[in-house]
Image 1 (cartoon, rainbow, N blue to C red):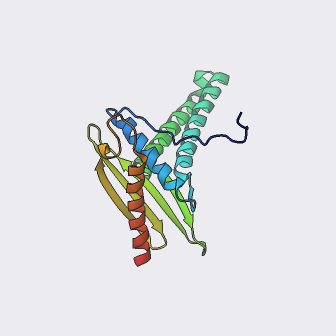
Image 2 (cartoon, rainbow, N blue to C red; image 1 turned 60 degrees about the vertical axis):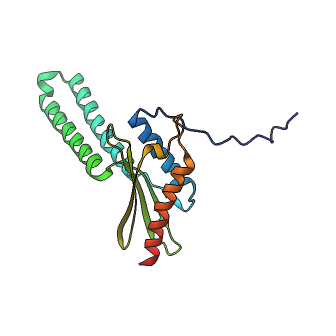
Length: 192
């Protein structure tokens, strides 16, 4: 009889994806890259600023919509016309800002991490990806931003390089690619 403390460590879970679904493949590869980037490097702490900005914009838009609905409920339509007009305009303005934020600031970024040195200097690492519809090229971009500017490295490989014939993500191949990009950026940082 086994003791309760002698629990077997669970084997690393294999991620299986429908290899013909481009969106599912991209998201599974993004998750594998994020796991590799943040899991193997304890000095990197994940930052949620981009996601929090998106959540705040969405919460404001929903708040405006709820306020309009509540105002219209307590003051029927002819009285609530100016409030409804303001709410509709504010909602569409917030959705426009949200669209601009996701299009131009996020740009496919799925992981942001901050690395602090002993001298309290911080570096921000960002991982972003792109995979066009009906295309097998997975474009991974790893960038670092510090006091000296922003540098980035890009890898463009077929998604078949990271997935076997059964649709299982080969985490060690993803990790090799992420490590190659990370080490080349770290070497650039030391050279300058």
